Structure formats: C-alpha cells, structure tokens
Amino acid sequence: MIDPIFHLIEKESARQREGLQLIPSENFASKNVIRAVGSPLMNKYSEGYSGRRYYEGNDVIDEIEDIAVNRAKKLFGVPHVNVQPYSGSPANSAVQMAILRPGDTLLGMKLTSGGHLTHGHPGVTFGGVFFNTVQYGLTQDARINLDEIRRLAHEHKPKLMIIGTTAYPFILPFKEFYAIAEEVGAYVLADISHVAGLVVAEAHPNPVPFAHVVMTTTHKTLRGPRGAMIMVTEKGLLKDSELAEKIDKAVFPGLQGGPHDNVTAGIAVVLGEAATPEFREYGKRVVKNARALASALTAHGVKLVGGGTENHLMIMDFSEFGGGTQVAYAMACAGMYANKNTVPNEPNSPFYPSGVRLGTPAITTIGLQEKDMEKVADWIARVIGRVKTHKLPKEKTKRAEFIKNFKQQMRADELCLAVKKEVAEFLTNQH
Ligand SMILES: *Cc1c(COP(=O)(O)O)cnc(C)c1O
Image 1 (cartoon, rainbow, N blue to C red):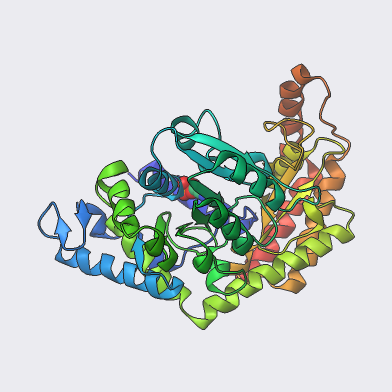
Image 2: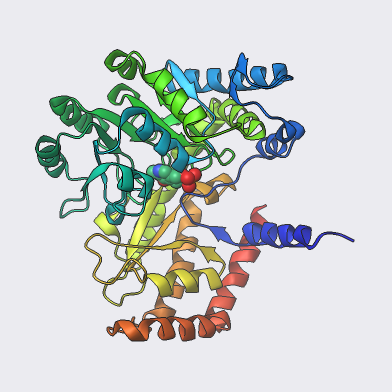
C-alpha cells in the first residue's frame, strides 16, 4: 500500500503547478537542488566544521561543505561563511548570540513596518526576551525612516543594528544605515533573506561593503533549499578579529547540533546555479515583472503601499474596507496564493490586517514575462471586485463569525472558480 503521505505530496505538487504562487518568500527550487536535498546525505551526522568533526566518516561531507562555503565566499565576495544554520530564524539568533550578551541593546525594524520577528520583536521572540530591543519604523511615504534610526541609535546606543525586511517594497538603504551605526559604534547585520537573489543578480544594492555580518535564507529569491548562511565581511573582521569564530561557535555548539548535510549540498548546488548568467537574467526579470504587475494593478485602481515597488514584492492596501483577509482568501479560492499583511499604521489589527503581500519570484521562475502581468493583474482585480462589498465588521466580536461565513461562501463562489480554471489552463499551456 502506498503511504497516503505520497498522495498528499502529489496533491500539493498539483496545487503548486496549477496555481499562481505569489507569496514573495516562496520559489521553485531546481531538480538538482531537490535531488541533493533528497539524497542519502541526510543519513550522516557531522557535528563540528570541515576538518574538525566529532564523528568519523565525514571526508565526503567535508568536501561538500567546503564547496558550499567557497562558492558563497566567491559569489558574495566575503572572507567567511557559515552554511550550517537550519533556517533564517536560528541564523539570526546565532548572530545575536555571537555579538550580544543578555541585556545588551538591539535596534531592529518593527514587524508591522515590514521587519522580521527575529529582529527583536518584543516579548515573544528570542531577541525580544533576552535583549533590550528598540524598534524603528517607516516615514509617511512608507520608506525606512533614517531620521528615526539616527535618533534611536544615539539615544539607546545599540550594540547591534539590523537592516532587512520581509514585507518592504523598496530598495534597502544599506549605506546610510551603516553610516549611522558608525556614529554610535554598533555592529551591523544586513538580513537579505528576501533579496539575496536580487543582490546576486545586481538587481538590488549589495550590503557587503556596508555591514559586518550578512545573513540570508537560501530558499527565497535565491531559489535553493530551506536553509541559511551567515557571512562575515572584511569590515566585520576589521571591527572584531574574532567575529567569524564567535559566529561559528554560536551556530555550533551554541544553538545547534549536527548540520543538515543534504541541505548543505543543496546550498552548494544553488550557489553554483546562482553564479550563471541565466540566474542574473532571472533576478533582473523578477524586478521587471514586479514593476509591470504593480503598474497593471494600479491601472485597475488598486492602492499599493508606498505607491509601487522597487524590488520583487508589493503590498496591496485595502484599508478602506478592512479587506486583507478577504482578498487573500478569495485569491486562494481563485488559484492565486498570496498572504494577508499589515499596512503601515494598520487601522484594523494584525490578525485581520488591511493588506495583501504578493511578489514575482516564483512566477518568474516558471517563465512568466512582463506581458503576462496584465493578465495576472486582471485576475486579481476581478477577485477584488467580487469581495469589495464584504467589509470587515467594525465590532471586533463579530469578525471571527464574519470571516468564517465569508470563507464558506468563497469556496463555492462562481467567479473565483472560473478564475481558478483560467489560471490553471494558462499555466498548463505555459509548461
Ligand atoms: C524569511 C526571513 C527570515 C526567517 O527565515 P526562516 O527560514 O523562515 O526561519 C528571517 N529574516 C527575514 C528578513 C526573512 O525574510
């Protein structure tokens, strides 16, 4: 008997094939990346680092990890790389553990402004519990607020300052941010999890000259397996000659045990792919497609946070009817997967936010071009038109019931089902 898990994997594969994957942190890894991750390398234990392992039988693993590290060094132009973090969140914890001691001050971007939980979100996260965290936000026109950052940096004297975003549609001001950190003597961590693939493609500025540590996940625009890398720059070693050692020690034995060798191999493979002219072309096309999608949506009367995009993502703003949850859900019923998201100065609540975040990394990987973005915008606009009258109730106690009824209605909605069919047909012809 076939384990039902494999039927479910086939079902999920079909969903990924037949729908538009618009979640900007998702992508399609290549067959070779999947081969590496699904390989017998997963059977091995390799605690420690290349040449310094706690178990025998690691000669091949050492070679693989060395290749991954060397490819990353070359691609990003950095002197030290650790490819062992299990994912982006533990990688950020490792950087904080390497640089900070409990009670030290960390300056990061607010979650509701587009920052990541692991940048010191107060109260519930590792950084927010063990360190004194201070958070910066956005200007009126939805850009990173450098004046606020300078004021907070001088007032609180953080030891670590983090720049990096998960829901921010504009270019990150690495140079200006670094200049502020220098004024107060702080370490800078640039978290490029979202834009790493664009950085490699030179479709986004490179933080390496303006940071001591650069962290990236490997599975977003970089298109590799789920994992992360921590890179120490020349500036980082100049500031702290022991920084590389501190980072390695924080990853293992500080926070982790054995590395996932199969993932390390997948990272090596994707770093090989990312060094090609095709990948460079891909990164540039992601941004072009995002611009085209943003202007097509705007032409349909959709309001975008900050008025557009300079990278791979955009945030649609439905604060006039409190519609983030409704639009994201109805889009999914129509075969277009995005996620609800807060907008700056969110008037509703993080649980029923006003925005929907969407991006072009995955649809660009499967070959969609600028000319296709009008079609995509058209489908999205039809769904928005359908749900616009479903206003989020002002009374908080009525919201859960309202959303439950709304969802039930959308699952059988004729317009959504019709769009879903069109999307699937379009993608079948695409493949
Ligand atoms: C995705 C992301 C992370 C966390 O990565 P996980 O692999 O989900 O743990 C950290 N920082 C930023 C900016 C991200 O976008």
